[in-house]
Length: 169
View 1 (spheres, rainbow, N blue to C red):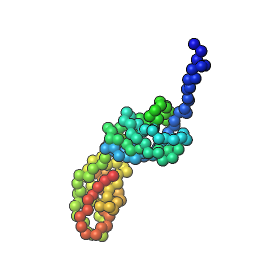
View 2 (cartoon, helix red, strand yellow):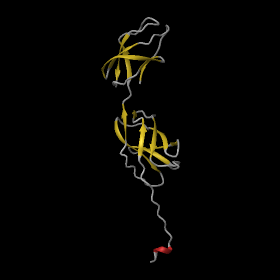
View 3 (cartoon, one colour):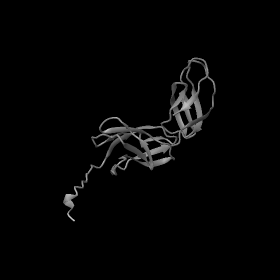
View 4 (cartoon, rainbow, N blue to C red):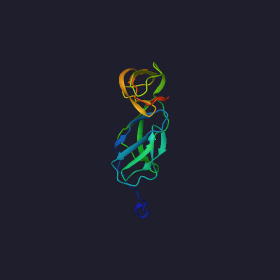
């Protein structure tokens, strides 16, 4: 058989490299928007991000970058890649995305203070780390001391009188 007459074509594609992406971690609840910069310069329509084995759609930002939203996952690190849905393109970057348990505020040692004055408030909860952020309403509180994954001491932000919700991130 003479294969020259069949006119079959095969196309070679460059291997994709994730040059940078971020953030590199997010909550197990999902919803983290991840921006990816690649080594390719092409149309990314029809491509997908893959978090371990879960595929999500990309939003094309440019001919070399996309963003995607992390799906829910289990705590720990998973393989992260961007692939063309129609072809198998190897990602040689070995990128990983880390899922973490979100922090939660369970209680305060002091539940009231004087308006427009700052005080050190012990905050109790779970999954705190050295980078935890505590807010009194919309106002961020400065960290006084990180005690443990369940306790942090903060300076309450001076506020007008009223009740505010204390949250962490």
